[in-house]
Image (cartoon, rainbow, N blue to C red; front, side, top):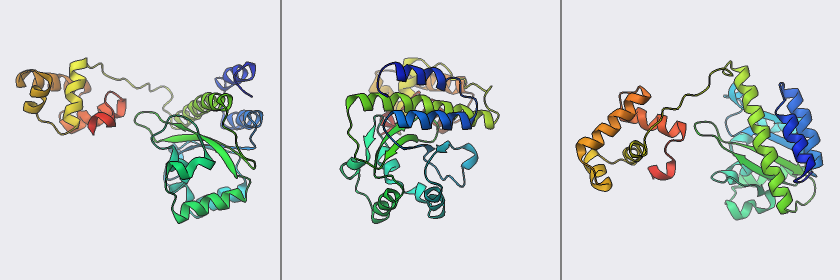
Amino acid sequence: MFIGPGLVEFLDRVTQVRAQADLHDLMLETTRRLGFEQFALVSHVDLIEASHEAVAVSNYHEAWVERIFAQRYFLDDPVHVASTGRVTPIAWHNIDQLILPSRRQHRILQEGAGFGLNDGVTVPVHAPGEYRGSCSFATSRRVWMTPHLQGASQVVAAYAFEAARLLVRTRLGLQRQLPIIPHLSPRQIDCVGLVASGKGDAQIAHMLGLSEATVHQHISEAMRRYGVFKRVSLVFRALFDGQICFHRVR
């Protein structure tokens, strides 16, 4: 399945998913149409400690899943590490070009190959304030990263992971609790971003060409809109909501 009617059909069906079993079946069918045999939608967390709030849907071999949990491979998965900081698909055969795998990570890749996971494509899926995640498609053959495959896998991953997130929220009873993000003005966001990077009012005023009183007013108003009383709480909430980014903090 590439860009075309097949992808449109997937998008129509994935928005109607209401149970994990339905998502599993749809992903299995879609995975095969993409030219792969196995798939995994997972949150990059401790799948034992955070199992109740993590996305974890796959058709990986049962024995391989048991080994992943027994050896806690999910904590060191080289595919997950390589996808960190990216938003586009990566091919597994390029992992050595993206990270320097440890001996344990090489072992994970070698053992996975024994269960038909010789090569694959992983699409990072990140949402502000949530666990990182990914959607992987695996095969026993070499993967050729064509533009069609890159585009189709990106779209499938995004919508499938979103469907999985909604199922998790429903399970946790959060489906009706829509996040309310306070509106901050551009100047307030500038000030909060500089607070996050460790700047004081005097430094912020100098950098933005404002008075200290004006900077203090912007920050106080941002805290009021968020309903917090400490600047560290304001920074945390603004990062969580995606109002400021880690790049700005650095």
